[in-house]
Image (cartoon, rainbow, N blue to C red; front, side):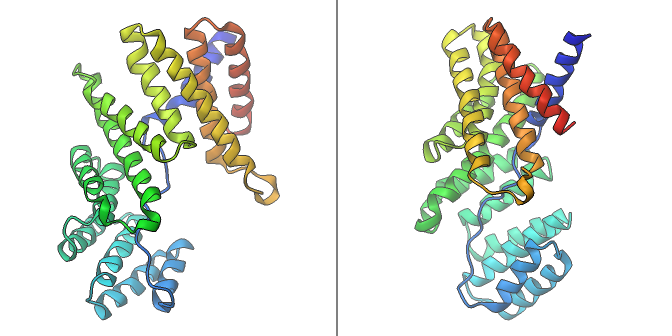
Length: 289
């Protein structure tokens, strides 16, 4: 019974691997300081007053036809439409933004995220995100590294989701290898990125270590899982959370990484380390069932 409970616990903990992995969007371009209507529209969007936000961005679209404000207005209204689950309207706004500014990396990134996360158009998402990276020199220099890191992460997720589907259909693991490469690109830009370390470790262990019987790959998976845990702990302790309540999504993510590391330890025959990690998974499962 204990073994069955442990298997179920690990399985539930890793379910999050089979979806898009973050709610943090690619950072859109800023509006000029002092633009009060834009500030109000953004505040309404952030406070989930979506219909009012859409109304305000629509006013801005009617009043501002010059680049880059016209592009920005369509991007932000598209984001608001996504929050309102109106995905076709969002796609239409991103298309209009591309008509104003062809090959714009900000727009391509938003469009790619929409196609990946909400419309299951994986190949189109990969195409948009790849183009966004190729035109990254057009991203504002002050935010380029952060934006580029986010785009690489979105592309890695797209390769993983699409690659997993192809792999399960008996096709090659080429797309999964591309996902590994993109997560590595994120880590090059942001070495303390917990999410990318965890995903890279998961893909290495699940799709490459067993097939190739590669001990080095297994050790790299273990190293990535450990870094995912350590960097997420740093992210958690760096913030004074209201009421000391750590956000639920961070607890769930921590449980995933401990579950992943437990599986790797088990596969490597590290029984003591496995027991320690699975104990943490069970404790976190009591906090977030």
